[in-house]
Length: 109
Image 1: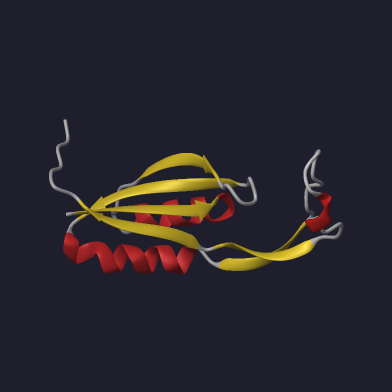
Image 2: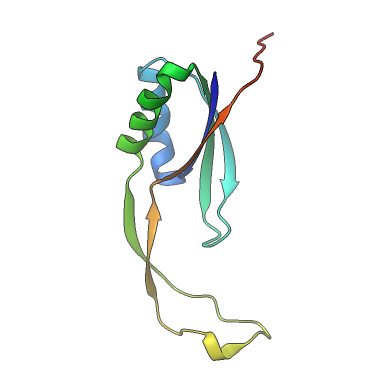
């Protein structure tokens, strides 16, 4: 058995949740915040048998696409202004960061 932890952008979370339900995979959704952009994310915890991991990964890949977005930088407050860029920069957002971990034991009560 494996535990799949998928961190996805909030914009993709409903689509992924619906796709998992439609294909009979159960998941727990947790609200989370990204450290780099301080943007909202959703973390999915998905427990599944080893033989289903590739199927779940494909569902995540199909429903969580990365895209480019302009982000206005936050001015440094009392920090080093030498590296501050005063104009919006384009960054890649979305997609999914996925961890697959072995599960030694699973109980459901």
